[in-house]
Amino acid sequence: MTVFVIIGVVGLLLVIGSMLLGEFIELGDGALSSTGLGVGAIVFGAIGIMTTANDLPTGLVYGGSAVAGIAAVWLSQLAIKRLQATEDGQPLKLVGMTGVAKSDITTQRGEVFLDTPQEIERRMAWSDAPIAEGSRIVVVAQEGSRVKVAPGDGAPTA
Image (cartoon, rainbow, N blue to C red):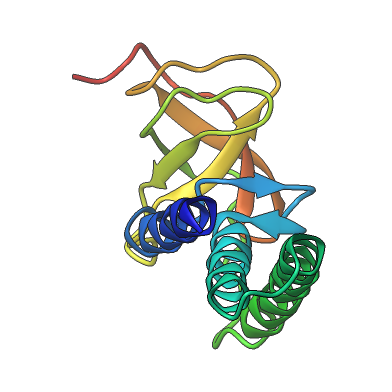
């Protein structure tokens, strides 16, 4: 039962982290996120605890928990995609906007804050070459809410 409690707690931490920090795990261009993984881990742990408490066979406990966890990940990712598709307002055209790298940016991940009044949150970003945290950046492409950036007009900001 301890395994299920630990996995459930890790899932809870992933969901809380996603709420506080935004999606910090995003695989397959949003096909799998930290929120989805967290929900799946919570369901896996909860089903495992319930079935263990009812003295069901070990194979059924782990198998049922895994199936329920995978189904929860799939359903939560489906819900996330539908919610993202219903966001209000027209998407901003971000190509050409400048900003600051809020984390080190790699070919796979990073975060930026753009210099526009409409932008109140950090955006997930990537770049062809590494960019250091604090560097000025410029947006060169946009895919959904993520942006591809390049080094901007100068050295890292203070």
